[in-house]
Image 1: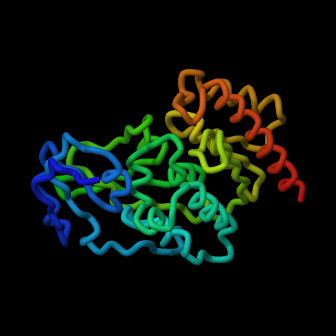
Image 2: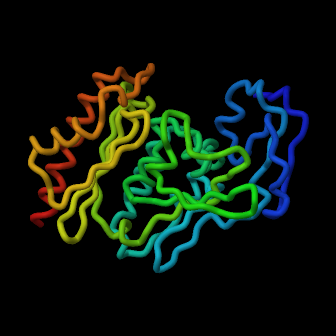
Length: 275
């Protein structure tokens, strides 16, 4: 869609040029959402793609993803064999339904910062206990856990002029076994519930709930819980008002599917723990 209120497009090539943020500005990376509908409040776009951030970096500490890394580039990354959570990356990429054009343009950072409840990059980041590295307008940076970064539907903890630089996934989380469950109202519909379970080597289990809720939730247990204990923990952690309501699913259906998928994950984790 043509954005007919845009009067200028800035193309900074260094951090020093990321200055002068003003009302009406918007960061531009893939632009798949930005150009999907009218943006009458915007007057200038600041293109981040000319900054040349490497898509990813692998180190002993884990995996770092640039905010400008596309979904297609993420899906192509070859991760170390010891990182047994690697298949979760591809599953979350494929949970972003779209054509190859979307895959090659949509970015990890854009998916997180848009903060749609169904955003699969939020599910990936939450399940693997990621940290968001945020650049501040004064030249500094701050680190924010993903659960504190995504605070509601289409609401993130970015102040004016701040930009998400990268997302860090720790190696310890990437070494965990994972279980993935997703459900939609239609075969090609947006996720109505997307849950991920992780299993530590010492038997600790965590459950991440996204898509069904306005923001991500993560529940951790020292060992795989019994079915009743899991249901009680979900009820205690996720208030009914937190379940999302839109054309892709009513809150009561989302809550029900959360419990169904959570039990499937619990059963799988219990089997993995005995293996």
